[in-house]
Length: 204
Image (tube, rainbow, N blue to C red; front, top):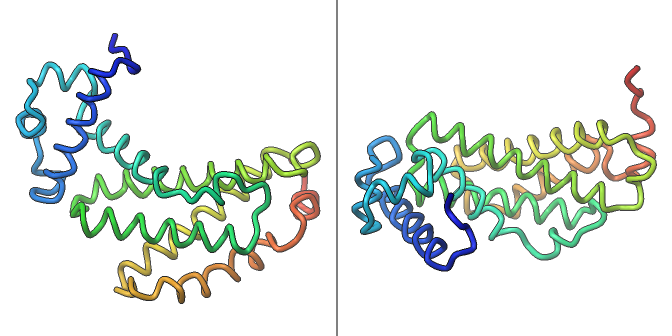
């Protein structure tokens, strides 16, 4: 089994990721083969398979890594879902989608779906983490928190993705102005989280 902490392993994985990113820009995901990645990374295919099961696993790791590197420290340390945190998440998601769909030529429907689902899941986890770290976690039902987090993440992602499709990528400020009130008011997150969650019916 590969030792993930070994500096040589880390270096090899970095070479693989860099090679894959370059190929994504030049060929698109569907046209890329394991042989292409190995050749670009100057390793053999056996070495690549020792680190990644296939190019889908590699894509998933790159997706998560790039997203997490973009998360502002303010969001990482947040203990309350405020207007400012909501705005930061909208801007983060918008920047990320532009990066992947334009720079990385996300022209494959299958991989676009993989990236979409991965980003929505990570958004949900970030939002859920904010709620759990806050003072409400000892009162609120965790199941309700998960539902609210999923809804909020999906709303933010859907709006940011639509913004890319309609070509409004130079108006991220307007996107924030549209999305933030919907998220904070439409989902009730402008109220205290305890109040909102306790308004929800408890499952039998």
